[in-house]
Length: 466
Ligand code: NAD
Image 1: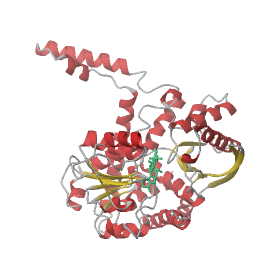
Image 2: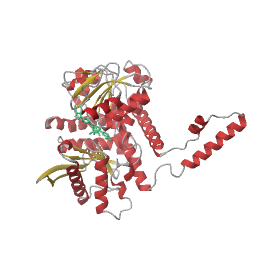
Image 3: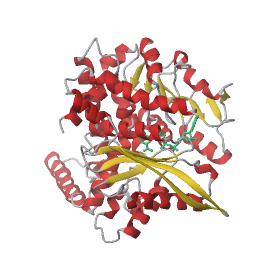
Image 4: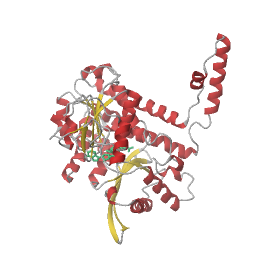
């Protein structure tokens, strides 16, 4: 991806902001303050790689301080540049507002390709980056709280926490300096799957929504809908797994770095992930066809297209090829502003990134709350609820004279574990956010063209009123 293409990502975010701003009566001065990035920290630091020292380029951008801490993932990619991180940080502000997560937006980027380094080298890079953030006061549970993004995961988050604690050992809330940590190291159950699960909840709501389903000329209910996914990383894999297992979606196309496969009668996501793990590629997956070009995933006819890899993958050059009814922006910024015009002209609905992939930051918020409370969710009330439900079941048995079978009894009397509460909180958040966005969208018909504008308006009004 060229740097001019990356610049378009930031431009696209700003252009979408301006379109949405025209639907609000927020004062222009306040709009300008919301639009700009509040703090940009660009750094260079040396890391010993083999016998040499490499100078690593990295960034942390805090887009908005209207709420603190600021929050946003850290991306490891050789494509990272300042504008990309600024665009991603801005999206985080709007995303947090949409799902009522009380944080400002931020993002981090380290310009490295993780595949080119050993685990030990990556650890050194991550720890050194964290030290830079500590030195400039760009990290802390009440300041700025990173999380995983493209190219990073719970391993990197554990290194960040450990480095932070080395320097700030006495801080009682130190564990809240980063989210997306392993469960055993102050993480939370359900964080790894959270973004993908949120994507599924959003799609499920969409296909329950009669007006939207009629708009795209489809049928009610997500079960049986066909899906194509680009990117089988954290977001793409869980979105696929959960849509298939809980929603009955049929995945017919998968695209990864090595190419794109198609299988009309459905690909099991679980088997495809296992196959790729064993063989290092999805090409050759049993029963599938490899499409001539990796980029052909955009043109597969399907109900749901899920770009889940990187930004600016649907552009003015390929937007006319899209034959999906709905695009769920599981990745951040996968559609350029110009491409969006083409898609909207073709009656394709785009469920915007700042809503559909907000599950990750929602559960990160739960993790941060858990860290500040120093207690896992469910510890206080689980047994109490179980006992109450048991008493109720016994009462029903006594009053009716019938015996409820043991399996049903176990389901009825189960108290919620942490993961149950996290999933329920995430579902509640995504469903509420969907309804809020739709309210803005229908209120502004026929003028408002996209759900993105509706989501943006919803976010801008919340940020402006803070
Ligand atoms: P990841 O690194 O886990 O996975 C990305 C996958 O995309 C990798 O498997 C990679 O090989 C693949 N990929 C890269 N280039 C590709 C190409 N040209 N064609 C096909 N596949 C390609 O990253 P992730 O955490 O899943 O993030 C993916 C996107 O989702 C990013 O835009 C990120 O900002 C966004 N996002 C992530 C989270 C999160 O919680 N991880 C939350 C919100 C949004």
